[in-house]
Image (cartoon, rainbow, N blue to C red; front, side, top):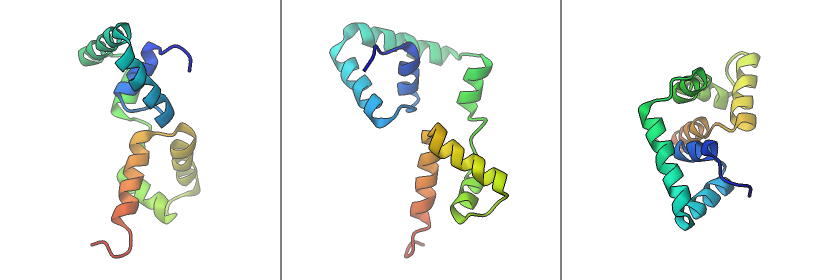
Length: 114
């Protein structure tokens, strides 16, 4: 794995890394005092609130489908363009928040659940 960047630490903080990278960052944080200091800086920066368009977009999850839209996606209901976008958002972008939401919907709709 290449050097851990500020962006990777932001993604780690926001639980937006693939599992393998998440584990690598956690291991590196345990082993490096310098990296932990950089991580504290990233946390402070996030707490101050970055106000760029990109930061607001990510923080507010502007491109994420709603829970109702994800439910429709599970049922195959909705217009083809919306379903195609949701599939792209889940599979290509790999949004961890929406994937977790979708998993929750799947569990809630399993036969035998009330």
